[in-house]
Length: 233
Length: 71
Image 1 (cartoon, each protein chain N blue to C red):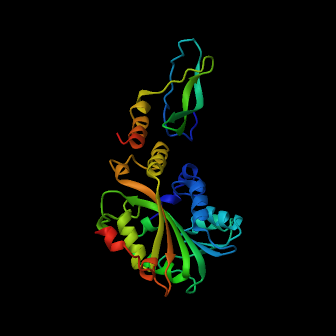
Image 2 (spheres, rainbow over the protein chains, first blue to last red; image 1 turned 90 degrees about the vertical axis):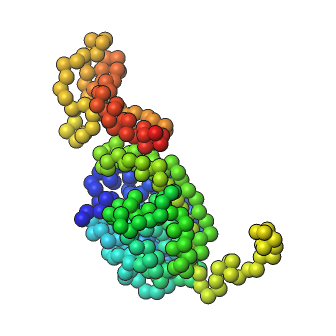
Image 3 (cartoon, one colour; image 1 turned 180 degrees about the vertical axis):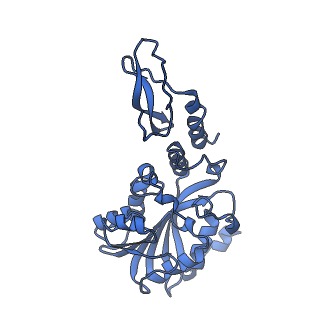
């Protein structure tokens, strides 16, 4: 089965970045991640390598990973890139200071294998920057999963819980409600996808920043906030 | 008409512009709510009039309007 982003005209519509928001959103994600200088950063699901190129441009020691040989051949023109699956990455534990994952988690039938691997290859305290589709009004149903990012959209709560359950602390979230509509309209206009019925109204696009927790625990665990009970009560 | 384009007006037409000019394929851009949609349409080379076929207006154009406007 060919992947949706391997469609020959997908690139023409979406640009090199292949995901909603394009290069501008990738640049914002990199800036917000605030990786240390020369950090070793993984682009998990790098596609054609647009973000690998941006990371290298910013002075980071970037490596891309993708399961599409076709896209990987393009990514290798931007920088180092290796073949592999998010669910079984060919890297040692704690290999990376940071990781980026753009519109990839929604293409996973199950989040756990990919998030476990991301947690494994990141150092403690490492930053994971994610942009992806999320659902506004429904829970994820694996029965309806067909490999498309729309069918794989989780709710913001489901994503938050998944990050937390895999040892990440979410410390930043931003949503871009119009981005997905604009991107969908362009794909429909170009004849790449059928006009979705009501789907657009129930989906949005978001950016998450997570920190991999080490032995020190989360901020919530480390600090006792006085007056919290009073505020809650 | 470009063979690459699968959108819009493919039929040969004998229509002419009301100014008398000939309609020839032109690359045009439709702007809607800040979004740009490019397409090749018959346009008058004399006065610039652009013919938007009904099938396009009630087809793809309406579809993208619905997506962008949550109609």
